Length: 311
Image (cartoon, rainbow, N blue to C red):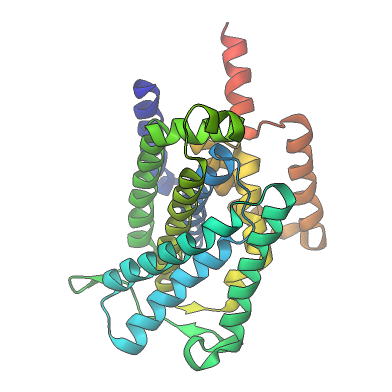
C-alpha cells in the first residue's frame, strides 16, 4: 500500500511537471489552474462522500465562505492574505463542526436535503448582505502575496496550485491509511456494524465533514485571490452538484479518481465549446455513459481493466 501510494504521487508529480509543455497560451494555464482548484476540493469531498458514505450538496457554500472571508479580511481590513486564508479556514471549520452534529444524524436523501439547505442559506446571505459581501455585484479581491511576493501570473499560480494538489493528495492518502480511514470505511460499510465494534461513528462523521469543509475553504480563498472577483454564484447549487459529479465520475473512494474526475469535467466543457448549443447534450451523454458502463467510476474501472488484461 505504501509503495502504491508513492508511485501514484510520483506519477501525479510527473504529469503536473510535464503538462505545461502542452500549453501554448495563458488560457491553457487558466484551465489547468481551475482544474487543480476543483481537484483539491474533490479530494477533500471524496473523504466524506467516497469513504464515509455521507452525501453533501452544500460544499460550494464552504468554498464561497472561504473566498469571501479571505476577500473581506484582505481588502477591507488589510489582513495579510495568508493570515486571511487561515482565518477563513478556522471559521469554516468551526461552522462545519457546529452544523455537522445535527445534520449528520440524518441519512440518505434527508442528509442530501439538509446539506443542500446549508448551501442555499449561505448563497442567500451572500446575496442579501451587500453591506459586507457586495451583494450580487460581487466582491473585489487583491492579489495573493506572501512576504511581499505577489502571485500575479498564470504560470506562477499553476506551480503553486500543482504543489498544493500534491500536498492535498498526500494528506488524504495518509488519512485514509490511518485509523481514521479505517473507521470511515467501516462506517461506510455498515454504521451499525461499526458501532458494534466500538467505532464512535458520530465523532468520525463530524471529523471528516470538518476536514472536507476546510479543504473547500482553503481553495475558495485562493480562488478568490486568483480571479480577483467573487460573486454569490460560487455558492450556488449547481457548483455543489458539479463537485459531487466530479467525485462520482472519477470514482468514489479513489483519491486519484477524484483528481481525474475534476480534471476531465473542468476541461471537457472548454473543448466542447465549439459545439455551441449541443455542448450540454454531449457532456450529459458522457456522464450518463460513464455511469452506465463504469458504475465504479472512470479510474477504478480503467485500473481494473488494465489489471485484467495484464493477467
